[in-house]
Image (cartoon, rainbow, N blue to C red; front, top):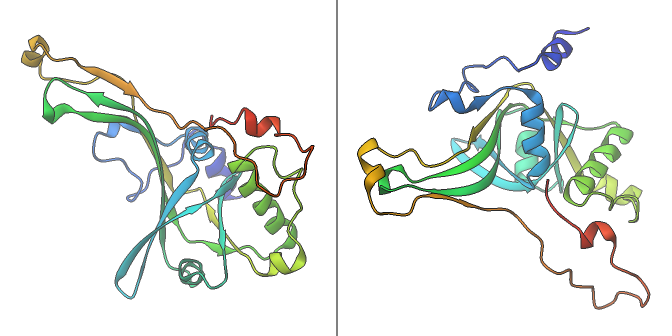
Length: 226
């Protein structure tokens, strides 16, 4: 078994200088399964990189297959072309779970789950791996969709770049629970607590060119992030 395999199979990733949680370290978590769960619930990641001393942060969709995060797009994408050069990248995903309302303005906060990933992305060239990554993108956004739609044809595959980022240098940070006020503020006549937040779907709107008789799939009707 390789060093990489050993690292992935550990109960937690070994923190590095870049992933070590320094601010409120008790909220840090380095367990792969916790990291994977956050990534699997999120929809959008933000990709940070620097080109010619100019920093960029680009939001994009993603997919995960085991210990790899995949991003994709057009070969004309500046972000993808830049990452192909082997520069370092920082990817973040954040889930907002609630607003934490304290008795003082200073102690207001948010309950959240977040992941930060560092590394170098590589081009996916193997055709089967590329198709699997594209399937992962679709299933990540709408589970059950891939088996119903037309798969990418040869031209579409050739016109899509897929990059892979290993989840070997990553950490999660999580805040849960009520507000933490100063002891003397607990007697203030001010409501305090948590206002939970969640991403929910609205009523599906059918395409105007949808053929008669095509029913709304159950995975759309009952869509939920979890």
